[in-house]
Length: 263
Image (cartoon, rainbow, N blue to C red; front, side, top):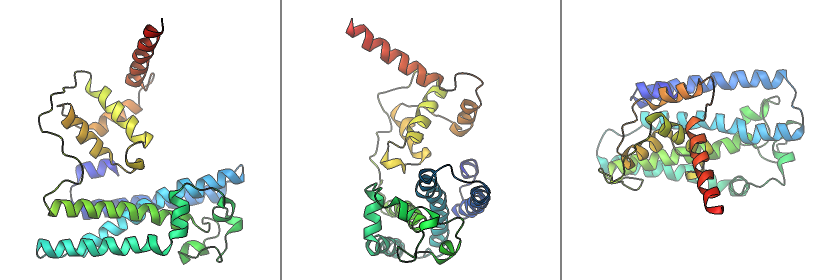
């Protein structure tokens, strides 16, 4: 999906490709889950609370964006703004309607996980948010689809806010001066390794930041053109030894400084 997005700027083509890719992923995942047993209830809870919702959320997000862009008004900027604002209100209404479960989701609660995320405990009395998912007893629990919607709707709202900011001629994120006084003098691939480490650690914006946003930030901050950073990431991933070469370098130098001042 990332590779396709880097080569295609048409949002409709990108979302259509993503939907097909995610659908195939969900089908393969479903087959694996049905064919194999979980080692424990905790493993099953982890999958239906943490893994499946994130995959399904990407489907929901791309479906929403495709639908939004297909219906996007062709007229004035004012009309487009109103359209985006209305779409945000519709999505936010879902969080209000399901505020009890959203609070459970946002607060990282666990006290009802046995009821919400085990297939054997699925009950219409708990929640019936998606009939299709509910009827699939082998690949659904009471709340995994609802959690997926929470994530997918939040991503969609961020997309809508970004489009609104573009129409207003404003940046949704703090603007960095075009010419920073800082220059990256290390290796380019080292910086890319660092960026992907930060991205995968989900320590920025609760893990909802896109890799291209992080890459752009570092490019502007350190006066460097990273080029095809995804291809560089593949090279890092395919290293035969010492995959985290630059991160190990940082750790080693940091520890040396600590030890030096402890002497």
